Length: 415
Image (cartoon, rainbow, N blue to C red; front, side, top):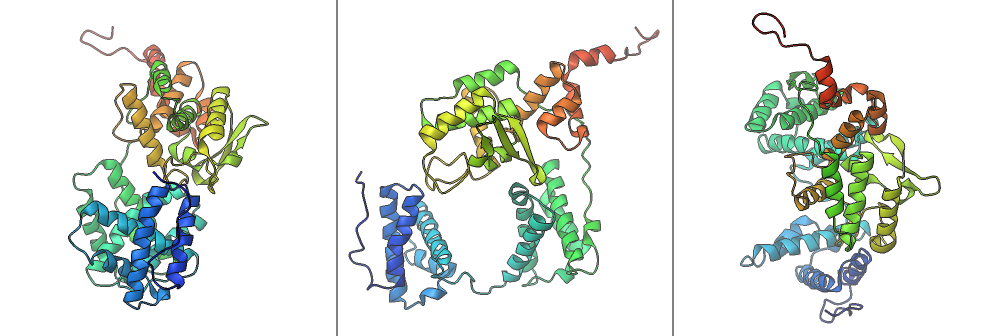
């Protein structure tokens, strides 16, 4: 595979705004760690798109997603992977042009623009006024996006004042069929929050959050799944540490297993959060709270090895980066969950249906309580805001439970 700088466009359009920015766009991608072979493919697509826009006499400042769709659809008889690759490359090109203020950042008005504006204001409300983290926004916003899209489709436009309890009921019934109780609970929670926002902002005359039913979830109704200390050590031992990705994953698994970090907290960890001199890690937890935990020896060694050998240079301040371009932080908690599921598979262990990364957190709490730690101590390590959240782990100390259990009544009296 050839390497080195890309040559200027040889047969592109006459020097113009798009032509000038094709190469700067490629330089931008190169700084994110894309391979030269990938850059050549993206250059070909971007250059073809530039020539096409010149031939169509489109004003550069007016370029938007509809032009990308028209360009890709001009040759319908092509394989789907190729089409998807072109779409991804051109969307990134357009995003770059907007960031460089070459192309207007305001897309043309459409029927759904009012829905997008409303969703954006709700997102700002959750982030600025309610203090929700980015991970929480990823949970709430897809539900609201689906609800608003359905309302746009039916009447042709968004009018919050026209929302009513019947629309809420119909949407809920359509979505919760054959879905888990957890999905239903999250959907109801998101809708309740959204309608409360609309009422507080004067978008609706009545508080529709009251029309969203509550999905009952019994606290401490089940015992959390957990791993034995032997299984935890087996998972850590079988993680391949001779490769860059293996060393990265090993450091992530140690943070989960030794300190009980949440997946989102691993993703949010930044270079400045590792306080090497005093041996502590700053953890960015729920509700934007920050706590400090000890930088244990094995965690520090794994982080130092990954940072010195494998992380490489990046404009991102996140500790853990993608191994493939763009070399930025992990996409979200789901990426950590994927790493955990792979680790469980390598160790020959079954992965839970959901919450794979939390399995280590439950295992740490279980191990602590079986070694005599109090609920208050576990709550402090896990950074629970309420000790009632920690109380469920008391049920896993089966030997202590046997001591306090009352005899089961049988015929002739208790025995």
